[in-house]
Image (cartoon, rainbow, N blue to C red; front, side, top):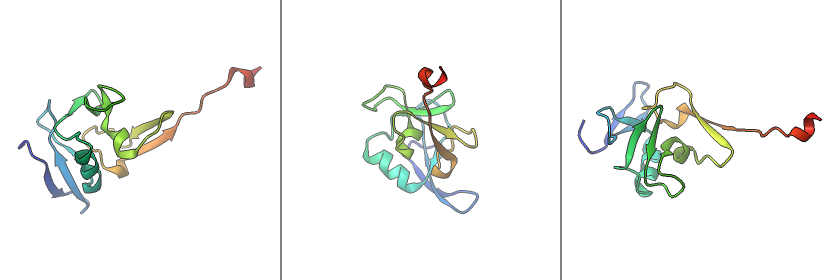
Length: 109
């Protein structure tokens, strides 16, 4: 795949952008608005596959920050799940944000 993002149409007719990653030949797909946000924030060209997540090493909070958190604007205490379990599918409709509740030991006594 070329080193530049490619604007395309997904199987369901949705417009997508195929974005190359640093450590694999397979691109990640995302919606154009999400690509624009990632590009404006300077993450394009700094994304790579890390296990089951596409990450960036240029985020101010971490050297291994999941791009799905950026797309969904997940807050601390929230987790982002990839519904299709396909790390190359970062379409917003494939990402789900869950708030993790902290159990209190006091409430169990």
